[in-house]
Image (cartoon, each protein chain N blue to C red):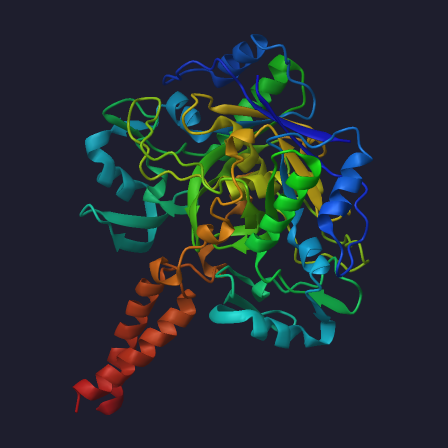
Length: 261
Length: 261
């Protein structure tokens, strides 16, 4: 039986601005009895990519930082603590709370922004890991996102390199011979989720290694995680229900006034 | 290093109405060299639960079946083929396309509905598997769902028994000592996702076994996957943007007419 193995890489040090993640990861790998092999996929928490890239700001700038990272406000809702939860689309097209700006696991007094270009970060890291280790590996940069309709969060891929983000099944058929036309499993998100099961949020293990999915590993020129993001104009939930209702009401009110003249 | 292992259970036969899934699964397990052990989590595709429970209807009743399963229409959009994509909330509270009604992997000429109560199905299956195998295992019943803002689908948990659906981190702190108040990882969905990586949609392997997550396995009285579903009134995306806009427009138009009288 083909088995998938997933484990958290132990021994990663605290990552500082300017750190070479490939060196830190390979040093940690070397201290384990498990060298990287062809087909391994490394799921790397975006926080250490942000830290290495110096994407840190002072904590008292949090609201300003969220605004700076926001391209479009999707929905807002007052929180119990007097603040406002902002669901926004960020520069990367990703829709999430607070544009990925997060204080957890950051140095006290600081908050972390998402990497500027997680696909580029993944590509650089995967390239360097391949060069130094000689193993054809893939890299997923993961972040923790909430979602509509379901409580809690799961880890998803915000960056990817050298790994298929979708399991391309077009043209294939199911066990009864029917074409699977609609199904497009987002394996990059599923890999990020599997990585989160072993990394946890508390263990200080920001890197998971997934072994046994080599069929998904390919050239560094494969499309990155940006290809997962659905453009707003194609999304049925591009705006919060209350926000869309309010827009509609204002337009309707003006039309009602005009019609009665 | 603690490792998570995930593999697809080979040798599952085609499941017929009335089949005893516990017997089929344990027979298949017995033919492998890997007996179930305490802490194993079985990720079972909802389709075989539906088949065993006889939740099959004739394919030409598809639109009627979707309507019958629908509690609330969340959003609709015309498809290229002349049909309409319906995002609906079903009896279980789950929001998804076509209320989970699906023709893939069903017998030709038939379509499958979701199990009536996937948590109850998971509980019955987990209880029977525990009794017969003597191993304290957990069961996740998985389904494939699309999601807003991101293309493709991932597998999520629509039923669960004997396994924590959330990794309860309340009151815990991150590596810098800050409380992780908001984070509530939905490990049930992440387990379903990990299972999908090995099951795929084509392999004829409807059961995955996850080993190494025993810390999540507990009594059969743990909350099921129904606890993952966020009630519509608490959800910022309880209605499609176009639908909410239209409702708002109609209300605004009436208000505008009234104001000008």
